[in-house]
Image (cartoon, rainbow, N blue to C red; front, side, top):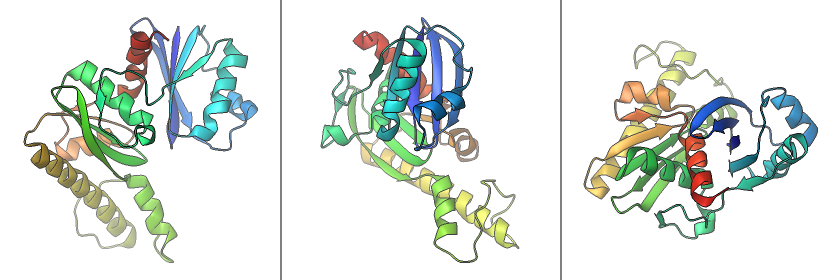
Length: 249
């Protein structure tokens, strides 16, 4: 069985695949201080199946060793980390290539494979990224902006009296208390930023291709904006499975 692992800034997601079928998936919070022992404790008995190979996409390199240790010593197989120079069947226009986040590359490959090209690929998590893959399977470029939760935390950290609030969409824009005012500003501001950036991307490329979104805030954003065609929470994990098949991991 293949174990796909997506090490993100907020969570580590695991997906077990039996051939093309998703057998099981789960996630744990990302903690940059994980030791091999504490990571095994966090995972617990969730990996209760036989693994014969593992593939990882990581944007938290300080956790690569402990994840590799978890798989090697706990399950007896090697872990393959997606690298920027792997052949994904995409032309990557990013300078330098080594600086391109492997999560973005995996998501673009996955969206192209699952939904076809051209396609706009959005990841709405700790960071907001929007990338465009054209009809020639060329990753033309993209953008990076803050995610909604970091925005909420930053507002709290740089002010003396503004609390950190739960991310909830208020029933109206104008609010009459501090908590509601912050929620309205964060949520409505983030939605406006996202749709505005998406509109600018479409204007620059001169078309409106299908928009695929993933990440922790994708479902939350997708419904009120109506700018997202498909929310795919498994986009990265499925992409790792497809890459494993492509490169022979």
